[in-house]
Length: 168
Image 1 (tube, rainbow, N blue to C red):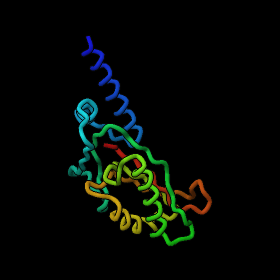
Image 2: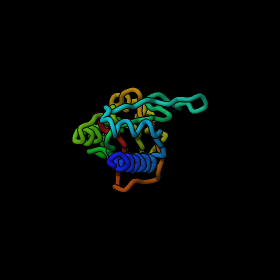
Image 3: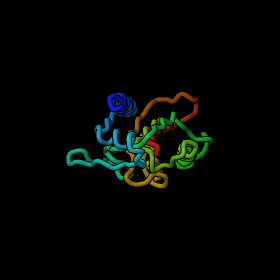
């Protein structure tokens, strides 16, 4: 009698996990990737997908990440402490803030599965971001999207980075 209840609970957890991951970035994990981590208490796992026809435009990120873990962390857009600093310093300050939030959740940059960055000066600042992110991220690199925008929510803010991590 307990077995059907456990199956129903596992199916519900798997459905909710897939829905959250889909909402987080459109990446749905296969059933086997989510159910194993939930039911067996497996450690965090992450692997890059790079099939022919879907290459990465630059090093430092993966076209897709398949990940399994028990919990997810959604980090709201973060920006630098000093809006007047040079852009490399602003990017580093932003990654440092993300690092603090990861640490508070018991994780690190190795658990990040996707980054989204928003830029007021995308073409000018993207090369700096591509250089700096490799000082923080580890292989397999997370999936990544960079978006140019005319302005951000805080006056003077020129970059904002959000992250999603799958926690151990």
